[in-house]
Structures are given as C-alpha cells and as structure tokens.
Image 1 (tube, rainbow, N blue to C red):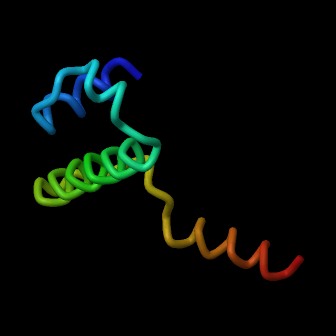
Image 2: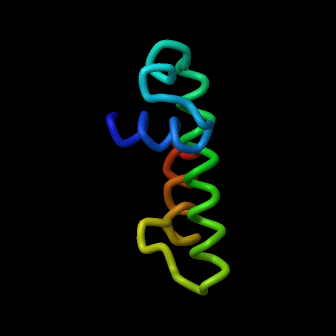
Image 3: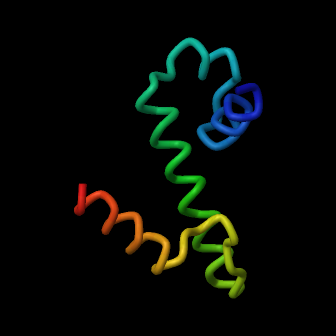
Length: 69
C-alpha cells in the first residue's frame, strides 16, 4: 500500500498525505489499471512474453467448462 501511495503521489504531484486524504477507491483502481497497461505495453514493445498471461488453449478450456455446466 505504501508503494502505491508513493507512486500515486509522484505521478500526480501530490504529497502522500494528500493522496491518503483525498483519493478514493476509484482513484486506486484507475491508477492500478493505468500502470498495469503501461507496463504491458512496454513489455509488448520489447517483445517480452509475460509468463503470467494465460494461453489461448487454457482460456478456451475454461470457457468450455463454464458453458458446459
């Protein structure tokens, strides 16, 4: 949590206490999604494969299990 508050404060030019006082859950979600997407785009541009991503086969198998219940 402290790292998130620090990163948000740096990104938005605020003191950490201002972020803690004024930020909402929506702000945290938007920040997390934006940073995650930026990191994904940087990895993609470098040709780095994210090993935490699911394979198409795995996702298809999961969908099949859900649909066949």
